[in-house]
Image (cartoon, rainbow, N blue to C red):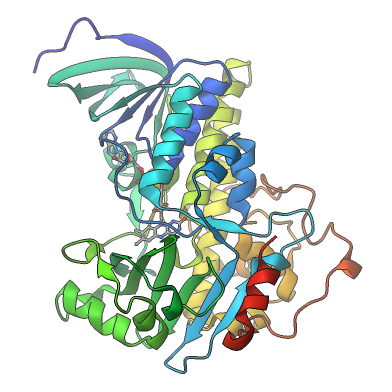
Length: 462
Ligand SMILES: Cc1cc2nc3c(=O)[nH]c(=O)nc-3n(C[C@H](O)[C@H](O)[C@H](O)COP(=O)(O)OP(=O)(O)OC[C@H]3O[C@@H](n4cnc5c(N)ncnc54)[C@H](O)[C@@H]3O)c2cc1C
């Protein structure tokens, strides 16, 4: 394949591979800091992507990248809490994000990823990033040991671009991690997901609080029900790979939905949007290294943890943002190695904490969210702080210091220096807040009386 000479050897401050949440956030921030950046995205946006329920800390990140107005204008579904169902009892209980610490945003969003990812990518473009869609990165280019650029296929030709830094945000494709054989599968979490979107969801079949994500747990798996538009619901079943292998995805999906009367009722009379349920396999892994000469790895390209606590998009965007900040600091004169190390320590702290919360849920509390909320050390306010997205809490924050004490749950083989400084809310932790202003609820999950849900709904809205 010959190179298209008119475009060969274009030089940028940075190249970002992939235009999902991690790549778009990174390219936005690099451009906002006044550097030249080329983002290469294989797909054409808007495009479908799974991963639609968000943690409350993400909202503050939207403010940090100056996109909250565009998100509000986008009319995404506001998520005020999560409704939990265990077994087949039909007992509705919920966790209300209104209970987060004073000064923190008490809600999040459910995101239709096709729409959200496009808004984020356009935001990077509007800020000055050069964005090429349908540009497929095929090869990494090295200058000695330093990653110095990429070759990509675009409009039928092979092009080459070079940069001081290459950021890999290619998601599960993981171009750099795979090139250097850095990706390791997580053998503690070998779940798979089977999912479908439903349109024309009937409001009367959904008696809980508007916008809540439905979370239903049963003997060999769990289900999500995420209202991603007013009348569209994403429904997914997560289970061990061994269960999926027993039958075909269609039958397994139906059998799992049938086990939860609440989910079954939520999609009653609604119409599936995909011909068949979609399947995602092998989605838990980590990379031992997030940086190297000339490169950064961010988001799912670096790590992916089981989706049960909805932290994937948040962690991916945060890593993208922090890689851009590290690149800026290097251009401003900070030592290259030190900037990379600081970035890597922060990201590793985040992913390592998140993995531990997930292990605790599956292995310590046998997937009982109420038990987990009530029994983790420190009680409700620290549990909620952790679930909401603070994966960098202080050394003595009871929940995380307990989970971090479990050596067998270490994510990375090589030791790294933990960062105990929340990059989202450095000053408004529960710990910093006046304890007198906090009244813990009697139970981790509140019961929903469906008769009075109009009042519950009102209370949940800001
Ligand atoms: C079953 C499941 C459920 C999930 N549920 C949730 C949830 O509820 N909440 C949550 O926060 N997260 C969830 N996630 C995780 C979430 O989807 C990811 O963490 C998030 O999308 C990662 O963003 P990213 O930008 O790193 O990668 P992606 O969003 O995957 O973006 C990567 C981009 O790179 C592009 N690309 C790939 N290869 C190339 C190439 N060679 N050249 C150019 N471009 C390339 C791709 O086209 C893609 O657009 C879930 C994941 C799974 C598997």
